[in-house]
Image 1 (cartoon, rainbow, N blue to C red):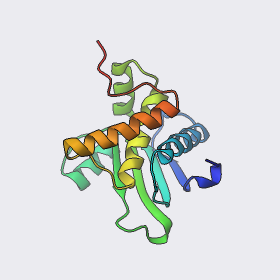
Image 2: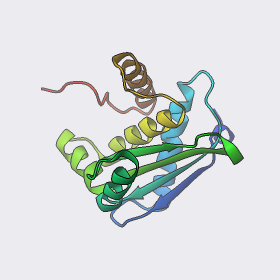
Image 3: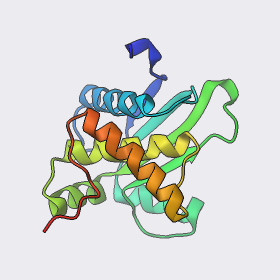
Image 4: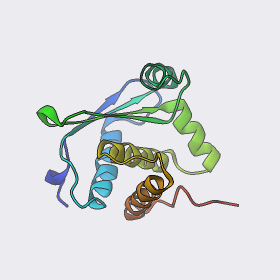
Length: 157
């Protein structure tokens, strides 16, 4: 896959504490590139990825999901790929960093996983049923393997 195969990715830093914007952009391009390789026919379109904090994630989660609490990642697919827009992804810093620490994995690996997860939602995949979850997790695992990142669903003892 060439760099031209990637969708336009607009990376925004909505809070401090994240890596530098160019590093986040490279990480997102790499993660989305790996996810696209797992799809038979990826839907093209621009993706906006916002790196923010738990306060904004709580607001977004309350507004769009009726859950007034922070979460690690939210995806907002465009209802139609009008004007070339595929959708938006948001990540909450405090939750992402805490989860990475709890899992004893690099933050960058966790962010890559969450970007892949969010991108697959923008591609129309979901995990509401066991079958959907198995399909989505298999794609995530394969994309992460391409990046040399361990299986995030593997149970560690």
